[in-house]
Length: 373
Image (cartoon, rainbow, N blue to C red; front, top):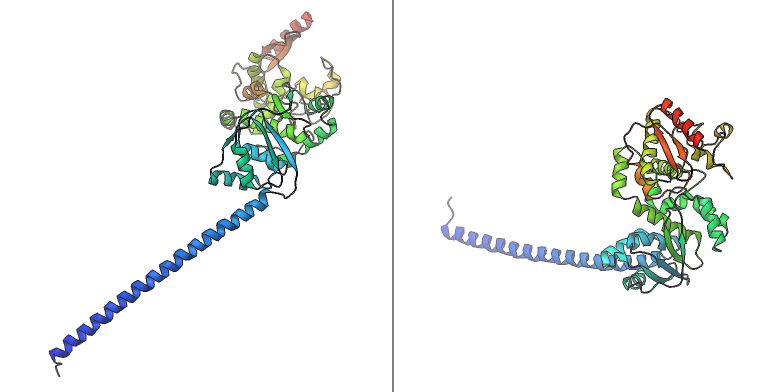
């Protein structure tokens, strides 16, 4: 039976009204959901920020009322100085401190000068202090560490200056685990008895009055990281050398030659001997373990079995034998290419050497050198 047309029209109107109401209710529901989500995000953001602020304050400040003075002898990136802040307990987490400096727009490079900080400061308080100019340099100590000094020689010098007992410096410098945690470039350095030997960069430094061993060591390590820059790291990578291998080579180069133009040649001898499986046979590696080494070693002395003796053991010694300067580090990854395998001291006063490609040439050069002495 066919329905009347009036009934069909009424049904269509009702259906349209219902659809319209569904649409309106859907819009209201979606709007309500959006408001709830926005409110939730806002609430979580605010609470999260407040929680993060409280957490950062707790992690940066130790709560101990202890004031320290920091002397920066040159402009220092915040990421580097945060290592020293963490070491001295001014902050508990340098990564969190660096993140807040980045997010909150803090100073990225601190000017040379003197800064006084307290262990109970929050990170925002530390930022305010460091944001100001360093001003004049406060009372400080100047130290100059020559290229080629060992940890022991440095320790004796610091004791002579009246800073602290020599053994105290040696102990801190040998605690390589602590410094690995603070300086990532040390992560690949193996455990060995002479600790940070090779990485305490020789230079002139301004340090606080009455310094601790850590004050000095942290500055030396920061300077090493600056000097051993991207170019030197890339050159080492191209040669297939680790940082530690470069430092060991540089320490030998530092002790074997006093002349700038000879260092790349000494480097070549080291590289060529390793490539041809020859013992390095470097006198400096024997003298390193001697209390009072002579100018010229006897055959018996070259045969003393120590992990550093390259007459006895093939390859590089177990660690650096001194703390090399920039020229020696550069020479280690930039050897000459003359085919040299030998060298012998020719002139003791000037430090000049004869360099040779064959053992026959070396023997003749050695005879000439001995005739001069």
